[in-house]
Image 1 (cartoon, rainbow, N blue to C red):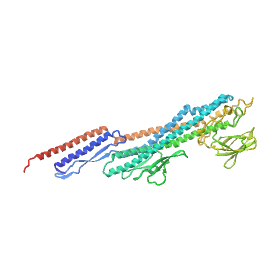
Image 2: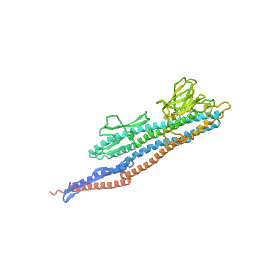
Image 3: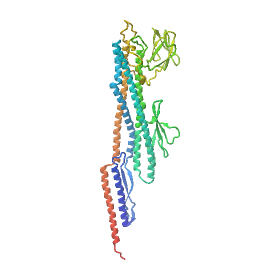
Image 4: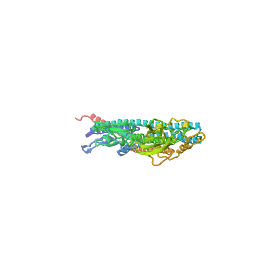
Length: 559
């Protein structure tokens, strides 16, 4: 519009545009400490100029849109990096807890009582007839069993807590993907009305960052501006429906399954557990169902080997009253009589864990003992019976028998490979101080009264290199225990270092993002002064036009 009214319109456009700029600058300053906020900027554009004499003349300014100031590459990098940060963050806290268990066990728990137990066998060897020393040994054995129980309980409590954490992470993921789906609709609706949905975009980016920290999600933008999200290779939501993630505990395998019901999937939920490899959810799953499970198995193997190795030697020895075939610990092996009147007895322990069979049949009479494989009844080994006692090693078992007084008896020996639960069930058997088998031969008045060979043999067992199942090289009981401590320590240290590195990377990316999208109080304050002056100048222009119009109105009528 030309003429004096056009000048007033120019002033009005300046007032409105600079008012929008002042609001935006104020909005930026008020959100200077808001996490995830992206600075906004008003985009000014000239009005289409008027075509009049003496030519095209400016027609003022428009505040066309309010744009988020973002670097999409940095934004995407920051979102993706949070997956690694979340994984090591949850790993660090979880592994630090296990590491503290072993630190405690090193100073006053399992390590100490393991040493006490074996060292006291030497005390008994030096004083084989001392019943007080024998009673102390039984107490040390019980203390050792309690240490294994305590460590198992600590593992169970920690895994239970991690299970709750896993369920909590899944709940958080579901809430955030549902909100992202809602925001997609709101953003598309706002853009359809020609508006800039900056607040919705900031919130969507913040939620995407949180989801990425929770799990290894994949994000990409559709052509219409919608944010698409995939979990485990499956779409988390569609335009009409939101998928649902579930943490399902599998009691058979003692692990959690992560299942996803995609929005377009009509069948049962899809198991995506193997694809959840990042974020806090991936970290908790890795520690609970892999690392902690491995350490519990390591503890069970230690108890399994300790029980069977001590029992195998102890059962061959003799107590103060001449009794033999007595286990020190409750055995891990099951023995069941399958034939006979019950006058004989049998004790079995695992001697070679790498070669032990699931089950063997044992036949014994007054002359000898034979061992057969249970599966095909092939003879595995045999031995003679002397003074009613027989000893044979076959099928991976060390078998001690007390021959029946008449006829023959048969036994089924099984469970040689039952390692799981060995630590939880480890305890001293129903023995007394007199039952401690320190001697290698029965003692009689004036003969073998100071026999301590069996006690020495058990003492030296602590230094003997044993073949632990699943291990490439043999190691002593102490070395095997130390390897578990070292493994946990290495895991915890790696998690701490990686978490520290990822925190530094995350901070660096955030600083770069803030350098682009962050609010500078100094810059925004300077802009407010500039926009204020522009606003005042435009208002002055309107006032000037008002004065001119008033002058025109007051001119005398020339007619």
